[in-house]
Image 1 (cartoon, rainbow, N blue to C red):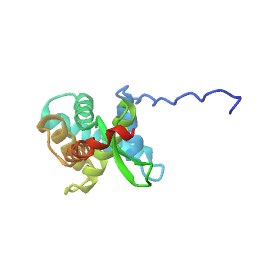
Image 2 (image 1 turned 120 degrees about the vertical axis):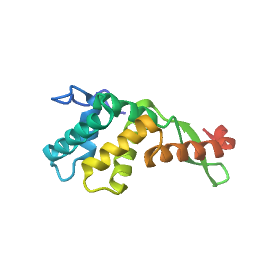
Image 3 (image 1 turned 90 degrees about the vertical axis):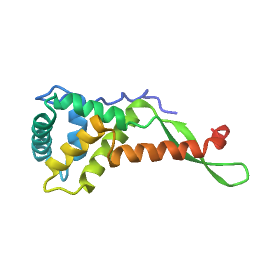
Length: 157
């Protein structure tokens, strides 16, 4: 057992322009090869695009999209006494769910057809926030269906 004590949990930094942790989390996940300024450029261009299309605050649209995509339950693989593996439904904590939602939104926007990442990201966020559709929403529903299907193994937790 460690004598040092428990490590402090890291919290996300605030975004310098919109003063939002969620924006910083999204930009950090979007960043490739350490190019954070490019990731910020992509996000803020997408934010301008969102503002033009919806006439609403893009940060609130982002928050709404993340809340709609955040999964509540997921499945974990557990091994039973007889050596079989079971998919057991498990509640996902909110911070982990938010990270999953951000990852799914970025993954869905990268797979979208479009000219630039800016337009792909803005259209995916608008679809997830207001229209309740898109690949990220579908992924959440798929995860919930998987958890519902394996509900009979919930006693293995």
